[in-house]
Length: 335
Image (cartoon, rainbow, N blue to C red):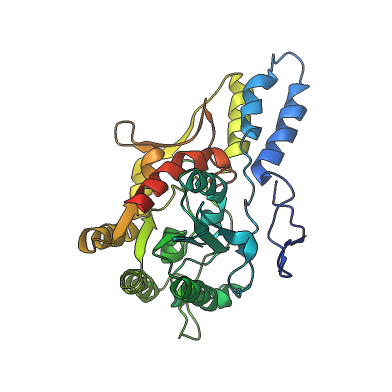
C-alpha cells in the first residue's frame, strides 16, 4: 500500500508552515518504482525497463508554494507572477486540483505574457459560502475564499479561474469507476457555512451545494470575468501504479482508460450548472478540460498511454496531464 509521505516545507517568503506537500513525485509513482525493481528481477519474464520509465517523466508533485492550510493575507509574493509590464489581470483560485495543473498552466500564461496571481487550499472548492464538515482545517474554506476574492477586487483583477473537485463536494461519495477502481477515503461533507452540522448522504445537502455553486458563481460574475474549469475525469485507481503493473505483465505499453459514461454520470449536475452559466452570462467562459481525455468515439477517458501518464494518483493530474489542459484554460482566459 503506497501513500503520500508528508513532511513540513517552509515557504521562502512567507512564514506559514505548509504540511501537505509530498517529498516524492507521487505516491503512485513511488509505488511503481518498487513494483518495477521488484518484478524486474523475476527470472524468465523478459521484463524491460524502457516502457516503465515513462511513468516517472511526469513531475507529478504538488507544484507551487501557493497551496495553503490556512487563510492568507494577500499578496503572497511567491504567488504573484507579473507580465512584462509588471501587471496582473488573472487570479487562479481553487483546491489541490488547481495546484496540480499549476506548473504547466503557469508556464503557458508566462509565455502568453499574462500576469497572474494564484492561491489554492486543499479540499476547498472556490465557493465562498461552502465549507467542509469532515474534519481537518476545512472549516476555514469560506474565509480562505473570501480573502482571495477581496484581494482580487482590491487590485483590479479582471478574470478569475475557478478549479475544484466540484463533483466530489456535491456527491460526497468517493469515486468508483465501475471497473475495479474505487477511491479510498471518507466521504466529503461539503455544505453551507451557516449550518452547524451536515451529512454527506442527505439529498437536501446536495441541493444546497449545487444551488450554492450557481448562486455564488453568478455573484462572482457580477465583478469578474469567470473561467470555469470543468471537472477533470476522476480515475478511481492509482494511475501510475496501475500503469506499471500493466506494463510489466504485458511487457509492452498499455493504455489505461476509464468509462466516459461514468464521467458523464458523475458530473451530470455540476456540468449542467456550468453549461447554464456559460450560456446565460457572456463573461463566463467554460474550459472543458475533460475533452482532452475523453472521447465520444471510444466512450473512454484516457488515464495513461504511450505518450505518458496523465495522473499522479487517482484524481490529480501529473504535469504531463497538465500540459494537455493548460492550452484549453489559457484559450478560455484569452476569450
